[in-house]
Image 1 (cartoon, one colour):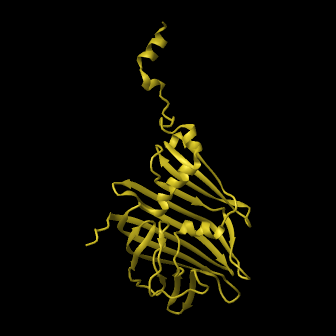
Image 2: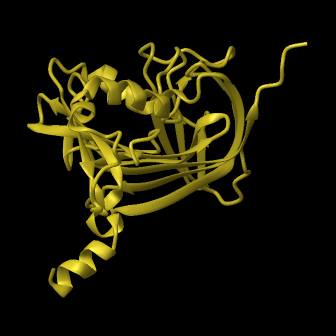
Image 3: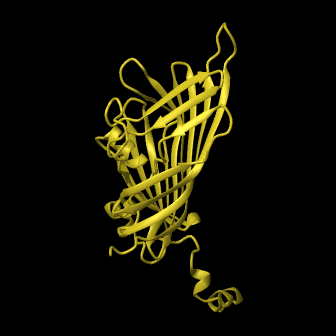
Length: 289
């Protein structure tokens, strides 16, 4: 037996193990069962099966560009709202969700009705005004000598989480989904491609299952340019994306950090929007007396 072969055999099974290979439980047959991974991924958007109470911090930023003209140059206004949110998430629905925004000191004002998470379905507040048209959100912009005011309101009907609402609006006839093992990330990755009929591109969603276990991250990226809007008013939505990072706890898979951003152009105006939520505390809901 040659010295090299003797050395390799003495090294034991650790020499033969490929560091990029999947765990034994992640077999080709398991990867091919796409429905299994799609069903498992729902915990990211629904939250744990039980009831949890969460608290966190929120940051909502808007960059507003107004067009210039022969009366004067265009201008940019940057508005930021920061605050705290708390709520109760049960079975994929926020049965309670309240946001307290910090006061704004300068002349510009950014008014947000409440945070709009990727996770969970949002129930409307009992005193929320009905939007026009029903079920749709709105953005209103006003400017005066004292500053610029931007009001962002979600639909008062039961709103889905951001990604679910987007999928509901797209209503794709056909989607493509497959799961693969990515050795560098040590993770099973579920890939979903949702075609956008009028834009010739796909919404790409990736869900990561580290070591083939519970899903802990989601990334949804739109094509660089998407058209939106009905009737005469058309909008351009640029670089829209959603990101969610979760953690596996004794309460189940809980959201950790999430962000949603996009740039919207309409009637010569441009609005850059960025929402970031950090889930800082969580506990099981107290038992009913």
